[in-house]
Length: 366
Ligand SMILES: Cc1cc2nc3c(=O)[nH]c(=O)nc-3n(C[C@H](O)[C@H](O)[C@H](O)COP(=O)(O)OP(=O)(O)OC[C@H]3O[C@@H](n4cnc5c(N)ncnc54)[C@H](O)[C@@H]3O)c2cc1C
Image (cartoon, rainbow, N blue to C red; front, side, top):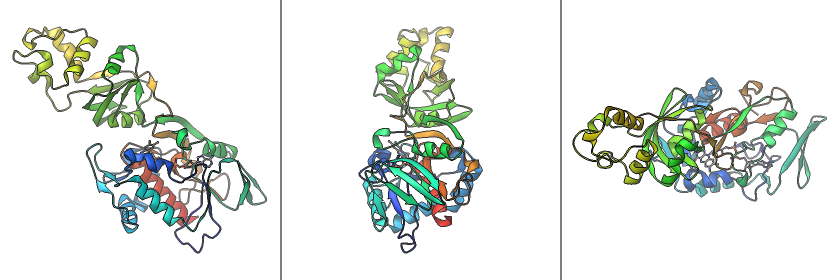
């Protein structure tokens, strides 16, 4: 929780309150410790929530400005579109934390200090923590969502918002793997195997790496799909760039004709109750069964939950927040930014980008 400004003189009386012993715990683990910090192709279409607000935010503080800011401060992310198109990764996420540590060195930090409650009396906020009560004229709540409690996440932003009369749009784990029903238990036997697929979810199509997991399925394309999944069906094209009918010609066995790891083909054939045999011997009905490789529809049982979800979808209703500075419309001098708001991005650097855009707008206009 903090109030910040780039002008050091103005902010003698600003403090950061952080329950961890160090700042930036999520930055540290992000992007496999290389912090996927923004995305070349970012647009409001990569987000759930008020897209016109997101569009405006991205215009105000764009990915170019994020990159300029980072470059100016010695962090030089590189484009690395291997996993998700347009992604910028840093050499090490520690570089980003070091940058923020340096930039905030003049600001008083209360570390190991957990905010428990906030009240407002006589134009002053009383911030009750596990150590002491801190008084403040203005409070910016940027304590994130519910994901990864092991990194310090708590419900405090939502508790404060509710206390001051805000509406919280349904909170759910997102950017997370799916658990599966018994018809898909064959996924589990392939734990660790990955393959390139297309997914179809909520009228949208995504492409990327799909990972079979001990609990079901994961991987970048599934994490993004989870943002749009609403209890129901999801479909996978396991052969996104291939015409199946062309593969099913000739005399090869199915396992040789299909471009998959043998383990994958064997588990898949078991799951549809089909023996590995020469493709020339396949009946029309058996060929139809194999068509499932192009559109494998299933209903996930659920997801891996907040312990594994990269973000929390839903959050504080952004209609109840002033869009010019993120001040609450319900309580003056109280601000909310970051993941606690009902704006959630896909996998690929989108969540950091929008959090930066919000933080900058808040800091400039507070
Ligand atoms: C494993 C993982 C990998 C990710 N990788 C990426 C990535 O590569 N790119 C990307 O764009 N996004 C990534 N994300 C998402 C991204 O980290 C978040 O969307 C972003 O950090 C949200 O910023 P925030 O400031 O709102 O919240 P946070 O970064 O969560 O910061 C909130 C801070 O508030 C503190 N806090 C919470 N409750 C209290 C309390 N009661 N008292 C005091 N302090 C409190 C927390 O300790 C935390 O330090 C990843 C998330 C995870 C979990």
